[in-house]
Image (cartoon, rainbow, N blue to C red; front, side, top):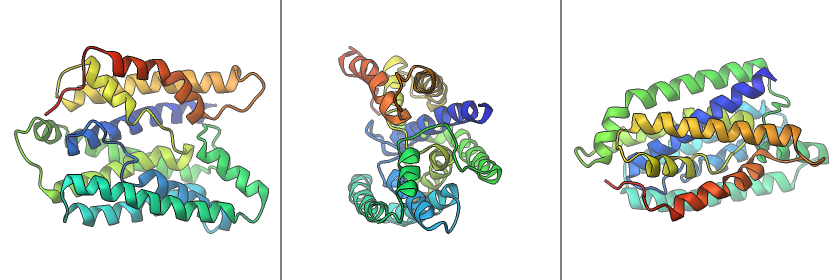
Length: 268
């Protein structure tokens, strides 16, 4: 139970902080931690590890996400932001297709179920070792430290006061990958909070100081995840409620607020 709540907290910080960094890097409210194929890569790595047993699910997820990030790192050095986002969508589709092939060729139904339960997101931590947890916490510490260190530059870049070099953006992408993988590799991909919550934060607070959005987004996300976790565990009506699906249902009123609010996220 302790580790479940730990990863509710960790995921509630890692995903929105990574999401708001992506939005500030690309000056685009559609920026998301999964927009460059990182989510698809995590799923591919988890699927390969689960089906083959060549390493733990957490390590497999990290390795494939790292490879994806390295590819995006070099692409970032060569192309414009608009082309990078387009590349990310296409690249993510390609990686997702590989993951589909791996999953549909699962050797046993039990392995397929194990992968599916991870991919639907949960905080049960089935099959997660203490080594996985230590590895995940190290990734989180590195990613969060980098987010705090780069906060001032990202805020100035978003306001148009400076233009960050492509190498800086590529290095930031690497740090975001560390932060996001710390949660996704353990709990699976969780939607909305890395895209919707940062936009809600920017609707509520018009400040362009990214540090304020780190706090607001994290607070909203942790609260949402905690409610989602408690519902899925104790008010599940006798059926299994994946975290990602339950979150989408709970988040609907917030999405209505986001798109009907008189305020809109600030633009650079």
